[in-house]
Amino acid sequence: MSYFRAIDPLPLQSAEQTKLHDFYAHLAEGRLTTTRCRGCGRLDWPPRAFCPECAADDYDWVDLPRDGVVHGFTVQETGVPAGFTPPLVFAIVKVGGLRIFAPVLTREPAALQVGARVRFVPARVADDPKGAPRHLVAFEPA
Amino acid sequence: MRKVALVGAGVTKFGVRKASYRDLIWEAGKACFDSVPAVKPRDLDGLVVGSVMPERTAFQSHISSMAAEALGIRPSSLSARTEHMCASGTVGIRYAYAFIAAGLADLVMVLGVEKLNQPVADEAILNMGMGVDREWEACHGLTAPPCFALAAQKHMARYGTTEEQLGRVGVKNHTHAARNPTAHFQKGATLEQVLCSRMISAPLRLFMCSPITDGAAAVILASEERARDLTRKPVWILGTGQALDGFTLSSLPEDYAHWPAMQRAAGAAYRMAGITPRDVDLAEVHDCFAIAEVIAYEELGFCEKGEGGRFVEKGRSDYGGDVVVNPRGGLMGCGHPLGATGVAQAAEVFAQLRDEAGSRQVAEARIGLTHNNSGMGEHVVMVYGR
Image 1 (tube, rainbow over the protein chains, first blue to last red):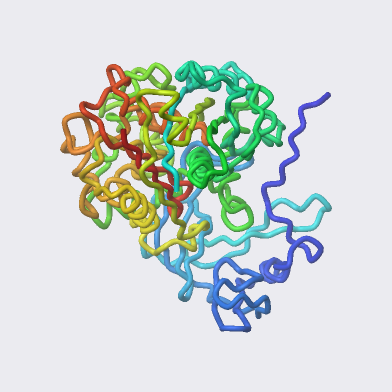
Image 2: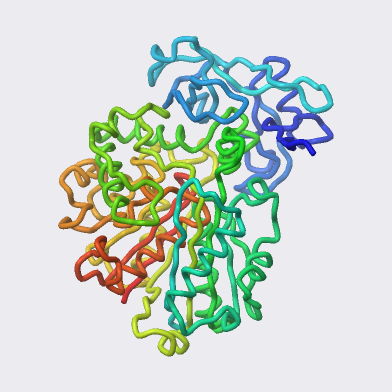
């Protein structure tokens, strides 16, 4: 018997698999979006299908600015999970009034600084098990 | 509510163990029963097992029943597994405490166990990422070290905390661990070793991080009546508190170096125990990373906010200081087998408050505290007294 290891470390993104499939469809179009509650108007990151404030489950998708500012970051040099290659640059990016956790894609991690301007880019990642393309949020130096 | 005490405690050797998940359960059970000869497995009416990822590491769920059978326990009041990432063991102790305090159980074992090291080495780190939000954060390869690195950077920028001060947490805890035969690491560490160890996620270096460790620990909790029958030296649970601010990094307060949920958890435990931070003689705090211990000094009230780096630098968290923090060697020295950690902390407090801690003994220890975080915004605190 072979050694089984069937772990998909990436979210399933299609309409059959998540209520938030529009988010991923927008990513594929190059749009960074999140949910705004139709009940109370609350804007959240990450997107969500249930409002923690007013308990509504209706929401609209709103586009976020493409430009953000690095609020904090760290460069991980060793000990990253299987499937990832260090160094990984992890950042909290302020976008509008929200703080978004995402990687910063850069060949010069040493040049990055708190307060630096970065720009959203959708990152194409591994296809899902049925072969559909998948994307995640990322930023790159502006 | 009824009073509740620890009456027994035992810990396995922590490390990269040549042992199965069940072996570790047997070893912790044996060590715990040996500590309280008046109790046999069938005397217990409950078992709670704190364990995070046996589904991945041992391909086993249904853990409390499996452990009950392994140890010959036949629960008649309480059988449960607790999973709360790094706080799983202590969360289990809280469950057992509440059941006994409420009169729903009398004599309950809480066992924490984790077999993290795997035949395929990179699988262990992959598995550790399960504690991070999969859809929004872990999908990017995020595990714990970068989260705490962000807190460390903020603390350094805001309060002037230095890498050397973070390194001193590693030196202290590795030094303590050298006196603990169950610790993963027993060679101690110099400041130079810590500051020259390889960078994991800036500014956290290897010796400022807890390792991936296998191990188990068990304690037995008893109602006051049973406790007085079973031992001359019960260790009483005086207070407990838990508070959560958020799970994802994006949801936490903007200042990652400020952990208000820990203040709330500690405040609740102190109020319940009727003590202040100054009354604490020893504290087993969750030094998963050096910065976590520095921030714990502050949020637990051992020093002012921002003073944590100087607190360790001046030796105030070591023997002879204000409060001995992590006499066991902490997560950095002992290792961090997730579900086992909180139970092993309780076992250390049990030994310390009974004057049975040998070369690690904190003089005249009367009040002991344990703390776990399971993320920067999630905290649980216990206060014990003799």
